[in-house]
Length: 349
Image (cartoon, rainbow, N blue to C red; front, top):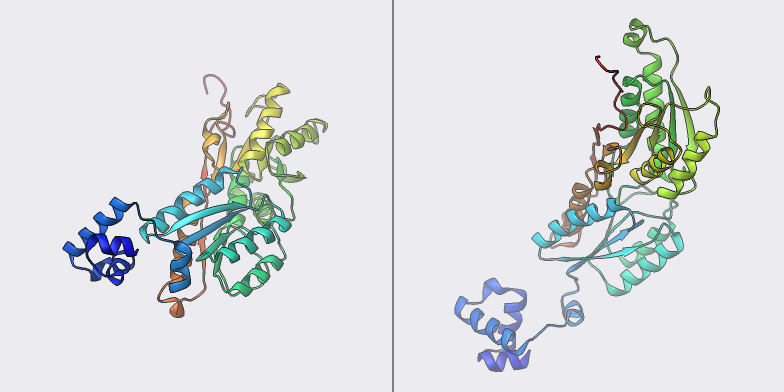
């Protein structure tokens, strides 16, 4: 910094103001300092700046699984908000492991990031409680843990599950399977609650009875050990092993990766989608529309979740932090209907 000051003919304090408070420096002086910085290739030390001002310019996103495109969209929204505040975002991954999550949070605490957006792998909230001792703020993204005192950015997954099943019932299905990821995860449990509500609403629907539909709607729960394409293929094999009388005619899948695995297995077995088996996914990732049979899905506003989480962190860690009030921001999902679940019409109908 002294070399920059000497070349520009200003004090070290003026160089510091150009870097940290450029609005207080006269335009001509600011231009000379910026030219000297460019000529010398000067890069300021973030660690030194952090020691001086005590606040980082970096937010962190701790994703549950970076193989899931959902987190790419969350990151996109978070980066938009961070850029507007002249901040950056670093990304780390817990890979669904509470142990890895604890290690990543410890590393982020050591680096003194400004705040963390996290989808917790530890459902007990224990690792986050430990991280809270660092006094670095964090926001929960798309998942809840016991306790309070933090901001949460969520999607109404109960509404999403109900929406998916209502759509399948409206397409004429009465035997519906819910292919869940591990039900230890709150999002898959919430989607199951919604699916059951959809079944209950169909059973009490007078309009269906008026149309001559008297078979009660039924929901079969197929819990997969994972939440990826392989888990979907395995679940589909289990469904195909059922007798014709037991087998669902439609499957609501806990996320799009599971749904794509189901679709792959059904295609390999010669099962026609949607004529013999309809499918609805969850998340509406980009691959859903490009599947061999375009996939109906429940769309999540992932980028909006990311933006909202970053904005809450920026507020909580900024100059007005003392006025910050913890709150929940809840987004509503929406159904995007495509060929995988639409009723098949006979020729001439």
